[in-house]
Amino acid sequence: MVKLIFLGPPGAGKGTQASRIADFYQVPHISTGDILRNNVAQKSPLGLQAKEYMDKGELVPDQLILDMVEERLKQNDAQNGWILDGFPRNVTQADFVEKLLSASKNGNDTREEKAEIINSLMVINLQVPDKVLVSRLLSRGRQDDNEETITNRLKVYHQQTEPLIEFYKERQQLVTIDGNNSVDAVTNYLKQAIR
Ligand code: AP5
Image 1 (cartoon, rainbow, N blue to C red):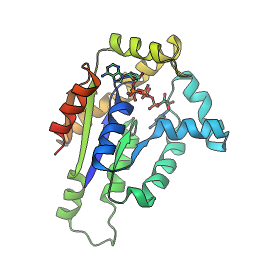
Image 2: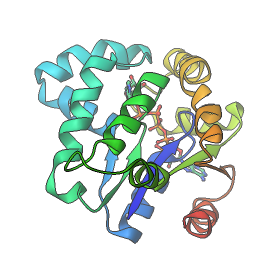
Image 3: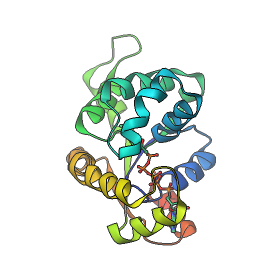
Protein backbone atom coordinates (compact mmCIF):
# COMPACT_ATOMS: atom_id res chain seq x y z
CA MET A 1 0.00 0.00 0.00
CA VAL A 2 1.46 3.37 -1.01
CA LYS A 3 1.71 5.83 1.88
CA LEU A 4 3.91 8.72 0.95
CA ILE A 5 4.66 12.11 2.39
CA PHE A 6 6.12 14.82 0.18
CA LEU A 7 8.35 17.05 2.25
CA GLY A 8 10.21 20.03 0.89
CA PRO A 9 10.34 23.80 0.78
CA PRO A 10 7.82 25.97 -1.08
CA GLY A 11 8.37 25.60 -4.81
CA ALA A 12 10.31 22.31 -4.54
CA GLY A 13 7.76 20.61 -6.80
CA LYS A 14 5.80 18.73 -4.13
CA GLY A 15 2.43 19.40 -5.78
CA THR A 16 3.70 18.76 -9.32
CA GLN A 17 5.32 15.45 -8.44
CA ALA A 18 2.71 14.27 -5.91
CA SER A 19 0.04 14.61 -8.57
CA ARG A 20 2.03 12.54 -11.11
CA ILE A 21 2.92 9.84 -8.59
CA ALA A 22 -0.68 9.69 -7.32
CA ASP A 23 -1.89 9.09 -10.90
CA PHE A 24 0.76 6.41 -11.36
CA TYR A 25 -0.23 4.51 -8.20
CA GLN A 26 -3.94 5.37 -8.39
CA VAL A 27 -4.09 6.80 -4.87
CA PRO A 28 -5.46 10.18 -3.81
CA HIS A 29 -3.15 13.21 -3.80
CA ILE A 30 -4.00 15.02 -0.59
CA SER A 31 -2.59 18.53 -0.54
CA THR A 32 -3.34 20.52 2.61
CA GLY A 33 -2.55 23.70 0.65
CA ASP A 34 -5.17 22.81 -2.02
CA ILE A 35 -7.81 21.91 0.60
CA LEU A 36 -7.16 25.20 2.38
CA ARG A 37 -7.30 27.21 -0.87
CA ASN A 38 -10.66 25.55 -1.72
CA ASN A 39 -11.95 26.56 1.69
CA VAL A 40 -10.72 30.11 1.20
CA ALA A 41 -12.45 30.26 -2.21
CA GLN A 42 -15.71 28.99 -0.69
CA LYS A 43 -15.37 31.37 2.27
CA SER A 44 -16.02 28.46 4.65
CA PRO A 45 -15.38 29.06 8.38
CA LEU A 46 -12.06 27.17 8.01
CA GLY A 47 -11.15 29.23 4.92
CA LEU A 48 -11.94 32.50 6.65
CA GLN A 49 -9.68 31.58 9.57
CA ALA A 50 -6.89 30.15 7.40
CA LYS A 51 -6.64 33.03 4.91
CA GLU A 52 -4.78 35.51 7.12
CA TYR A 53 -2.07 32.93 7.88
CA MET A 54 -1.73 31.84 4.24
CA ASP A 55 -1.48 35.43 3.00
CA LYS A 56 1.42 36.01 5.41
CA GLY A 57 3.10 32.68 4.65
CA GLU A 58 2.60 31.46 8.23
CA LEU A 59 1.46 27.97 9.11
CA VAL A 60 -2.27 27.65 9.74
CA PRO A 61 -2.72 26.62 13.41
CA ASP A 62 -2.46 22.90 14.09
CA GLN A 63 -5.92 22.57 15.64
CA LEU A 64 -7.48 23.58 12.29
CA ILE A 65 -5.19 21.41 10.18
CA LEU A 66 -5.27 18.18 12.19
CA ASP A 67 -9.06 17.80 12.12
CA MET A 68 -9.08 18.61 8.42
CA VAL A 69 -6.50 15.91 7.61
CA GLU A 70 -8.11 13.31 9.87
CA GLU A 71 -11.46 13.87 8.12
CA ARG A 72 -9.85 13.60 4.67
CA LEU A 73 -8.03 10.38 5.51
CA LYS A 74 -11.28 8.77 6.68
CA GLN A 75 -12.81 9.09 3.21
CA ASN A 76 -13.27 5.92 1.16
CA ASP A 77 -10.72 6.71 -1.53
CA ALA A 78 -7.96 6.98 1.11
CA GLN A 79 -8.38 3.49 2.52
CA ASN A 80 -5.88 1.88 0.14
CA GLY A 81 -3.09 4.40 0.31
CA TRP A 82 -2.48 8.11 -0.13
CA ILE A 83 0.06 10.78 -0.89
CA LEU A 84 0.27 13.66 1.55
CA ASP A 85 1.61 16.88 0.05
CA GLY A 86 2.48 19.73 2.44
CA PHE A 87 1.59 17.76 5.55
CA PRO A 88 3.10 17.25 8.09
CA ARG A 89 4.88 20.58 8.39
CA ASN A 90 6.04 20.54 11.99
CA VAL A 91 6.79 17.99 14.69
CA THR A 92 3.29 18.16 16.19
CA GLN A 93 1.80 17.25 12.80
CA ALA A 94 4.37 14.47 12.28
CA ASP A 95 3.54 13.00 15.71
CA PHE A 96 -0.12 13.12 14.69
CA VAL A 97 0.55 11.11 11.50
CA GLU A 98 2.41 8.52 13.54
CA LYS A 99 -0.49 8.30 15.98
CA LEU A 100 -2.99 7.90 13.13
CA LEU A 101 -0.88 5.19 11.52
CA SER A 102 -0.41 3.24 14.72
CA ALA A 103 -4.09 3.44 15.70
CA SER A 104 -5.25 -0.13 15.39
CA LYS A 105 -8.47 -1.01 13.58
CA ASN A 106 -9.48 -3.41 16.34
CA GLY A 107 -7.19 -2.36 19.17
CA ASN A 108 -5.48 -5.77 19.13
CA ASP A 109 -2.47 -5.21 16.90
CA THR A 110 0.77 -6.51 18.35
CA ARG A 111 3.73 -4.20 18.84
CA GLU A 112 5.32 -5.76 15.70
CA GLU A 113 2.18 -5.17 13.63
CA LYS A 114 2.07 -1.54 14.72
CA ALA A 115 5.76 -1.12 13.88
CA GLU A 116 5.12 -2.61 10.43
CA ILE A 117 2.27 -0.18 9.78
CA ILE A 118 4.48 2.77 10.74
CA ASN A 119 7.31 1.39 8.60
CA SER A 120 5.05 1.30 5.54
CA LEU A 121 5.34 5.09 5.42
CA MET A 122 7.91 6.63 3.10
CA VAL A 123 8.89 10.29 3.23
CA ILE A 124 10.26 12.02 0.15
CA ASN A 125 12.44 15.03 0.80
CA LEU A 126 12.62 17.12 -2.38
CA GLN A 127 15.76 19.22 -2.21
CA VAL A 128 16.08 22.45 -4.22
CA PRO A 129 18.30 25.50 -3.48
CA ASP A 130 16.47 28.56 -2.10
CA LYS A 131 17.52 30.73 -5.08
CA VAL A 132 15.84 28.36 -7.54
CA LEU A 133 12.72 28.15 -5.35
CA VAL A 134 12.26 31.92 -5.30
CA SER A 135 12.57 32.20 -9.07
CA ARG A 136 10.10 29.32 -9.64
CA LEU A 137 7.52 30.85 -7.30
CA LEU A 138 7.85 34.39 -8.63
CA SER A 139 7.22 33.15 -12.14
CA ARG A 140 4.13 31.16 -11.04
CA GLY A 141 2.29 34.08 -9.41
CA ARG A 142 -0.18 32.41 -7.01
CA GLN A 143 -1.84 34.69 -4.41
CA ASP A 144 0.96 33.91 -1.91
CA ASP A 145 3.76 34.07 -4.51
CA ASN A 146 4.90 37.64 -3.83
CA GLU A 147 8.40 38.42 -2.62
CA GLU A 148 7.44 39.22 0.99
CA THR A 149 5.31 36.12 1.51
CA ILE A 150 7.79 33.84 -0.27
CA THR A 151 10.58 35.07 2.04
CA ASN A 152 8.43 34.27 5.07
CA ARG A 153 7.31 30.87 3.70
CA LEU A 154 10.98 29.94 3.28
CA LYS A 155 11.81 31.16 6.80
CA VAL A 156 8.90 29.18 8.25
CA TYR A 157 10.02 26.13 6.26
CA HIS A 158 13.58 26.31 7.60
CA GLN A 159 12.44 26.90 11.19
CA GLN A 160 9.47 24.58 11.52
CA THR A 161 9.46 22.02 8.71
CA GLU A 162 13.13 21.31 8.02
CA PRO A 163 13.57 19.64 11.47
CA LEU A 164 11.32 16.86 10.10
CA ILE A 165 14.21 15.76 7.87
CA GLU A 166 16.08 14.62 11.01
CA PHE A 167 12.82 13.27 12.52
CA TYR A 168 12.26 10.94 9.55
CA LYS A 169 15.97 10.15 9.08
CA GLU A 170 16.04 8.77 12.63
CA ARG A 171 13.06 6.58 11.74
CA GLN A 172 14.76 5.46 8.51
CA GLN A 173 11.75 6.60 6.52
CA LEU A 174 13.43 9.40 4.57
CA VAL A 175 14.51 9.39 0.94
CA THR A 176 16.10 12.57 -0.40
CA ILE A 177 15.65 13.40 -4.08
CA ASP A 178 17.40 16.17 -5.99
CA GLY A 179 14.46 18.29 -7.14
CA ASN A 180 16.64 20.70 -9.10
CA ASN A 181 16.17 18.84 -12.37
CA SER A 182 13.54 18.75 -15.07
CA VAL A 183 10.04 17.71 -13.98
CA ASP A 184 10.32 14.44 -15.94
CA ALA A 185 13.75 13.61 -14.52
CA VAL A 186 12.48 14.13 -10.94
CA THR A 187 9.45 11.89 -11.65
CA ASN A 188 11.80 9.17 -12.89
CA TYR A 189 14.01 9.42 -9.79
CA LEU A 190 10.89 9.15 -7.66
CA LYS A 191 9.59 6.08 -9.45
CA GLN A 192 12.95 4.41 -8.92
CA ALA A 193 13.05 5.37 -5.23
CA ILE A 194 9.54 4.35 -4.26
CA ARG A 195 9.56 0.77 -3.11
P1 AP5 B 1 1.18 24.86 0.04
O1 AP5 B 1 0.12 24.96 -0.97
O2 AP5 B 1 1.55 23.54 0.57
O3 AP5 B 1 2.42 25.65 -0.52
P2 AP5 B 1 3.99 25.43 -0.39
O4 AP5 B 1 4.49 24.43 0.56
O5 AP5 B 1 4.50 26.81 -0.18
O6 AP5 B 1 4.32 24.78 -1.72
P3 AP5 B 1 4.04 25.25 -3.19
O7 AP5 B 1 2.70 24.81 -3.62
O8 AP5 B 1 4.37 26.69 -3.38
O9 AP5 B 1 5.21 24.46 -3.88
P4 AP5 B 1 5.36 22.94 -4.25
O10 AP5 B 1 6.54 22.37 -3.55
O11 AP5 B 1 4.06 22.20 -4.13
O12 AP5 B 1 5.78 23.11 -5.75
P5 AP5 B 1 4.86 23.10 -7.05
O13 AP5 B 1 4.78 21.72 -7.57
O14 AP5 B 1 3.59 23.83 -6.75
O15 AP5 B 1 0.80 25.76 1.30
C1 AP5 B 1 0.34 27.09 1.16
C2 AP5 B 1 0.02 27.66 2.53
O16 AP5 B 1 -1.05 26.89 3.14
C3 AP5 B 1 1.15 27.61 3.56
O17 AP5 B 1 1.99 28.74 3.46
C4 AP5 B 1 0.37 27.60 4.88
O18 AP5 B 1 -0.12 28.87 5.21
C5 AP5 B 1 -0.84 26.72 4.54
N1 AP5 B 1 -0.60 25.29 4.82
C6 AP5 B 1 -0.57 24.27 3.91
N2 AP5 B 1 -0.34 23.10 4.53
C7 AP5 B 1 -0.25 23.38 5.85
C8 AP5 B 1 -0.01 22.59 7.00
N3 AP5 B 1 0.20 21.26 6.90
N4 AP5 B 1 0.04 23.21 8.21
C9 AP5 B 1 -0.17 24.53 8.32
N5 AP5 B 1 -0.40 25.34 7.27
C10 AP5 B 1 -0.43 24.77 6.04
O19 AP5 B 1 5.78 23.94 -8.03
C11 AP5 B 1 6.02 25.32 -7.85
C12 AP5 B 1 6.30 25.95 -9.22
O20 AP5 B 1 7.51 25.42 -9.74
C13 AP5 B 1 5.21 25.65 -10.27
O21 AP5 B 1 5.04 26.76 -11.10
C14 AP5 B 1 5.77 24.45 -11.05
O22 AP5 B 1 5.30 24.39 -12.35
C15 AP5 B 1 7.25 24.73 -10.97
N6 AP5 B 1 8.08 23.51 -10.96
C16 AP5 B 1 7.82 22.35 -10.28
N7 AP5 B 1 8.79 21.46 -10.49
C17 AP5 B 1 9.69 22.04 -11.33
C18 AP5 B 1 10.93 21.62 -11.91
N8 AP5 B 1 11.44 20.40 -11.68
N9 AP5 B 1 11.60 22.47 -12.70
C19 AP5 B 1 11.08 23.74 -12.94
N10 AP5 B 1 9.92 24.20 -12.43
C20 AP5 B 1 9.24 23.37 -11.62
